[in-house]
Image (cartoon, rainbow, N blue to C red; front, side, top):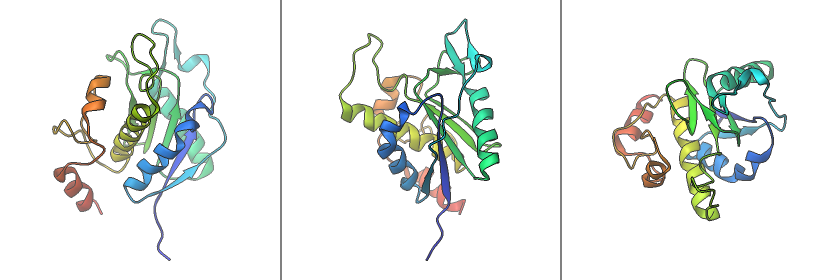
Length: 181
């Protein structure tokens, strides 16, 4: 029996993001890893909320994920949430990974709704969730942003750029991942 590395998945703020668990688990298995899903919600406080921006601070959420992961004695971790998140000097982010802390947070807030509040078809949303989950997990595994715009590891600054990605790694990123072991 071979051992596969696990990626811990934590709900952040609520369990709402778990409706996309099929896509998140597929993104983890995309890298031949096993999902290790927690049912304990990581709560957020006023400290993580930026009142002026009306968004949660992704870097502080990562610290909450790391604290829970360390108590649970787990390895790499992905927090999933439906709250809108941001980083300094950026209007919003779909997700953030701290490679030193080996933890990521992924928000579905902007992956599921268009600017006018129009809900998207389920297939489009599921594809976006898969691609951005796989993107953050790629960072957890040591991949950096790719200049090939169709690669999962390309940086997405807009929902159109997420939609333009293919649900695949380019050959260069495949080789980088392979060389990391």
